[in-house]
Amino acid sequence: MPSLTIENYVKAIYQIALQAPEKAASTGEIASALEVSPGTVTSMLKTLSETGLASYTKYEGVRLTESGRKLALRVLRRHRLIELFLVHTLDLAWDEVHEEAENMEHAVSDFLVDRIDQFLGYPSSDPHGDPIPTADGKIRTEQGVKLTQWEPGKPFRLVRVMDQSSDFLRYLSEESLQPGCQAKLITNRAEAGIVTIEIEGRITALGLEAAEKLMVAAVS
Image (tube, rainbow, N blue to C red; front, side):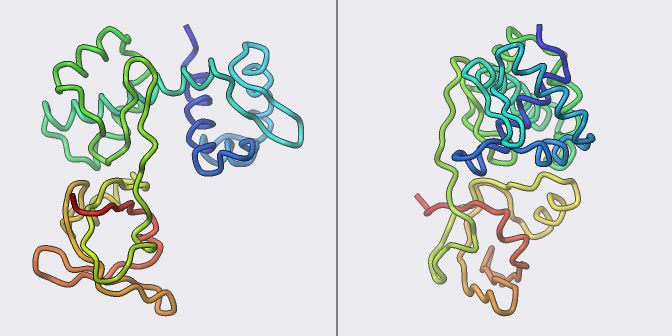
């Protein structure tokens, strides 16, 4: 069985690679994601290469092998199903479940995760809109576009939140912005650093940094 550390590394590498699939994940990016030193990362990347989970090239970075990718998706599947389970069964808020899932994702078996999936009705996304990998390792790739790229005047549906820090999620809750909600982009003023949206009959302003973290799609 892969160790907790190995699972954390392959998950981090997978998520970094999603942002720039054409390049290898750098030591610095991984160190920042896991809050460890670059030297610690370099040592672990050599271990991942030796176990066949990744391909590491000095000064270039690391890419997951197919085995590494499958392991990363297994960990993400556990994490996201646990988050959704905690929201549905224990009534935890969406800003409370990420850290709890981080602690639990390495302790539950795939058998239990499959039963949780069945209990929840085979959901496609977690409370933050992140896609949940299927048991056979498939995951949807459509993630919407950033709110800052949306056309003013068009209604949208919030499909995913890319920042899952508790403070940011609580802020979104206060503004009634959660995956599945519908709103309309009114203005996108890059020079002023804000966008304005209409939601539930009121106008709300968001900073560009916040708007960059919201993925939206057309209202179906």
